[in-house]
Structures are given as structure tokens and as C-alpha cells.
Image (cartoon, rainbow, N blue to C red; front, side, top):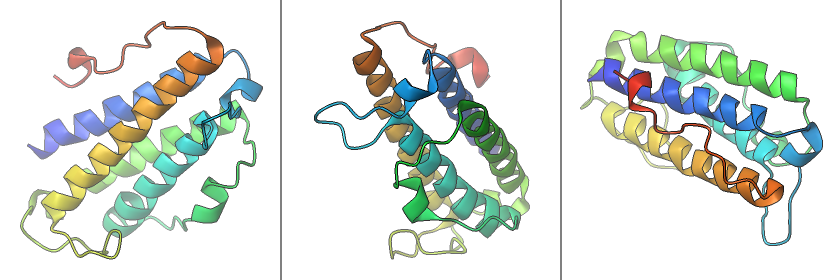
Length: 161
């Protein structure tokens, strides 16, 4: 089960990179049209910061230090740097899920999430659904800001089997 979950995380993060690469320029990644609070860039930083903190640092033991206020500051980060952050996140998530404790679903997760102590299983599923939720927002942001309904192939089953 953990292998399938790991592949699903990797697919979602690969799709995030595909989404960002589908924007024609950095400006559109960081745009916030009326009615939208967060840009795709902000959401990408937030998704990666969240996973690097809760899975990378807390489970894989990386030295990542989260800066949540920066994630939401709206400070533009170059597209190449965002893609590198996603790549690092993919590696850290894979390393975390390869740890034996990631398969111990009923044990306590190392850190509370949202002030709540979850089990490993609850945390892994919550973090994955959080990623998928915001990934959908990035897809909508791209389609709305560009007026482009082209898919980037999200939810590709071949990427997880």
C-alpha cells in the first residue's frame, strides 16, 4: 500500500511541475485575478513547504526549515526555482515513504498537523488529499488566467501502476 501511495504522491508532484510548465511565463504563474487569493506560484510553494515539513523533515529527517509566511507572501520565485523545489519535494517525499515507520499506519505521526495528533496513516492520507486539493486549484488557476482548457494529463493512471 505504501508503494502505491508513494507513486500517487510522485504523480501529483509531477503534475504540479507539468502545470507550471504549461504557463507561458512567470508573470502568469504569479497572477491573482479578481476573486482568487493565491497564485499558482503561492500554491506550489505552499504544497511543497507542507510536504517538505511534514514528510521530509519530520519523517525522512531532512534539515528543511519551513517558512510558511513566505509561502503565502506572494513573492515571485522564478519558474526554474519552483521546478527545482518540486523536484526536491519529490525526492524528500519518496525518502519519507521508504522509511519503515511509514508503513506503521496505526502509530502516532511524529508531529501534530493542524494542532491534532494523527496516526501515520491518517497523516499520509491527509497530506495527500491536501496536495490534490491545491493541485486542482492550480489547474483551475491556469485555465482561468490563460483562458486555456487544455489538460496536462492529471490523474494519469499509468503514472501510478
